[in-house]
Each structure stands twice: as C-alpha cells, then as structure tokens.
Length: 70
Image 1 (spheres, helix red, strand yellow):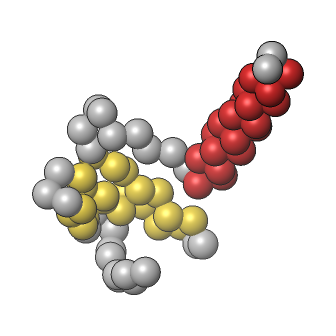
Image 2 (cartoon, rainbow, N blue to C red; image 1 turned 180 degrees about the vertical axis):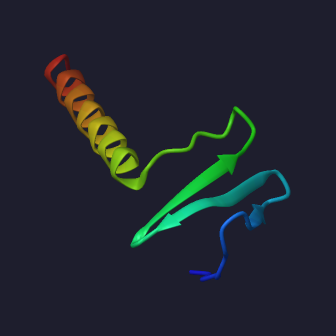
C-alpha cells in the first residue's frame, strides 16, 4: 500500500486519468472527490464487497440449478 499525505484541495493522479482530490477534513473524516472516466466503476469498499458476495451467491445458485438439470 502506498501512503501519502495530502492537505485540503490537494490531489493525486492515478493511471493518468483518475484524479482524487481532498475536499474537506473535519476531525477524523475526510471528504474526497474522484474524477474518473465514466466507464470506471467506483464503489465504497463495503458496497463493493456486498456486490462480490451477491455475485458469488448467484453463481453458486446457478451452478446448483445446472447440476439439478443434468
């Protein structure tokens, strides 16, 4: 993991086309803005993990159904 220090209104660039900007800092919360191409999905980690789990369950259910049909 790369750890960087940034102040309010400072940015970092990822892969030449994603810009992450620190918008606000209040106590232990940091508000960030992400400017990226529309085709790049951006999720909060907890939402991403829920999507992955739902996809895994759907695949398992689909595989079980396919086995029943054999």
